[in-house]
Length: 306
Image (tube, rainbow, N blue to C red; front, side):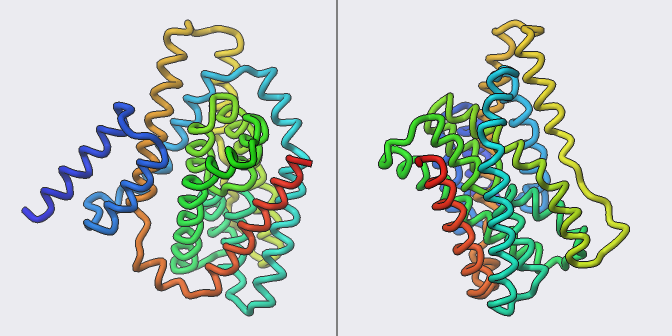
């Protein structure tokens, strides 16, 4: 019986997200508040749900984009993506050694910061044979910083008078996880959302070369590298929309539904953040993640605005 109020509140927030009653930042805050006030009744399933819902949401957003715009955006963001990844990984390796941290934990945090948050951590952890504790700590810190970014980035963008294009590009580079990137950009504007999604997914493809680099760095062999195949479906969705293979009435519903699924995803992300887990991480991993996040945020912002 004690679980009933928690399940009821959980379901009410899920319905509020699906019916467009709450936006991305509100969903995230509700999720975090829920995790503090109640024990998540579906925590075992939440991480799997986040993974699948995020992929479906991103693919659905492709039905609102066009191939010409996507290619132009991808070209514009390539050099910034390349330099930010190289510099962030180099700084992360240097700081991990200087701070005498566990190198595998440091590398997971660095990879999550430089590429795409939880997806990068999940892909690289088996390649370097990281243990469960390191994976949990890295995910917890990255999700926390993602949550902060989602809440503060739109305000900073407005304060600095960033254009839709500038903000979309900044989000795609400076926020780790795809869900938070799209969530922040969605609240800023339609153009920012399209740019952020495209650049972010092109950044996600860097999982492959970074995984290969990680294999050599930690001298591991025989581990499979996870390739983010859902990006191919995202490209197919863009192609379908570009050549008008589906009527606008259908594609608009798919895009709208994807945005609501994303809001739901952010509630689930918030509901899985544990204060206990974060307290157990210690100061060094948090300090490393914070320095890297500030570096990539400031570097990308200066690159975009100058």
